[in-house]
Amino acid sequence: MNLFRIYLSLILCTCFACNVGQKRLPVPEKKLIEILTDAHYAEAALQEVYGNQKDSLKKIYYKEIFQLHKVSEEEMTKSMDILRKDPARLDKIYQAILENLKG
Image (tube, rainbow, N blue to C red):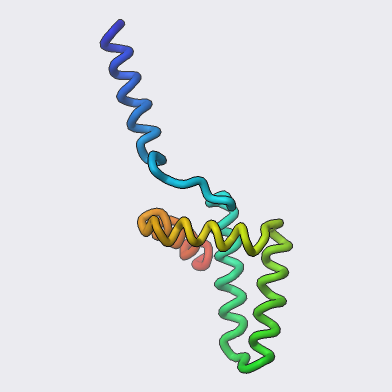
């Protein structure tokens, strides 16, 4: 019975160890991946636009993306600030974004 408890404890510790030290993001990772995928599409659409028109369209696109996903610019900024300090986590998110963009 004691061996079972030790084994169970090791399994639980292993499962939760991945999230130790990770700050909670204001925007959940799944939603963040969707938002950043949309942002990449918006940036691609702006590649051939220049000057004031580009700036204006960019503001409109991002405002629409935030409204569509029901997040604020502040939540996104805080999430990205946290991720900049955790490159492995950011890389994992960008791998998911790249998968979305392939499809």
